Image 1 (cartoon, rainbow, N blue to C red):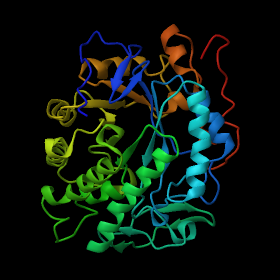
Image 2: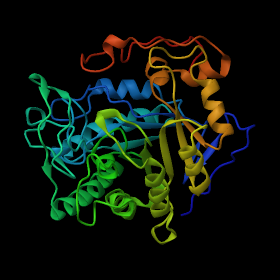
Image 3: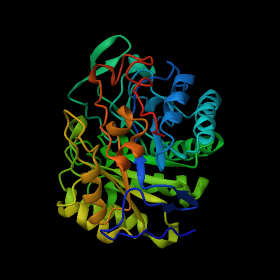
Length: 374
């Protein structure tokens, strides 16, 4: 199935419906993946998470938080996974609740690579090269210095490609409409793209064409497993989180787009650009060269949600060619965000103390909604 991009006219509104592969989205607002560490220690989604996502079902699409495709990919405590039957069962309760509320969900598949610790996963992290994250990590036993990861062998690479494909199949079994492969924010796939974390001399390292190979192989394997119309990919060009230094951003992403747009492999559902700036040449080139649907995540102030909830920034990206808009913190703090943006109602601000590790309902499922919101 091909997936033609929706209209990119400057008159397009975030409230207009859109098609995404076989899905008809009621609006162009996407809830971006937000890891909030409310799973069990074994990575099983909890009933509280079902409540949280169902509250936000009026988003055109929800991309559920990053879930690991295998045990060694775990980044932090109490994050979700999708490599065991109990993970599938836990996520099924979430997708059932969202579907009952009228929503649609993709699941993000994320492997931490060097962003991991044996105290959390029980395993030494793996990465394209044995280059340690020069930061501390949150673990069940407190902050720990990140260890030197084990360099992935060619067999490891092949096994991880297969693990992503198996995780995608489990996600469909769990009731998701599709999956988003995570190649951003300094995690495993992004580590393969970046020169400071990929020092390999084989076919997965060195020139840009080699460094995009692993990402392309993962996406193609996932697409072959569940259908390209059920697959998205997230990237964050130039993002330096987790001490990533790409080195040649302007070359990486056109090469990756070309590999993904190869008609021999089928058109995936979308490409999702994190921290998108419509004035940046790399965003403009991605939009020009990517033939399918483009989701853009606008850059919003770090210390507060704008009074308009991010609407102006979203409309600016639509005018620059984005088809759908992904918002994170605005959806976290405003379960009824679509209604608030449509009516111009004030938005809730995020309670930062409860964003990540504390667990529980506070700052998670207790944000107020408007009486007429939905």
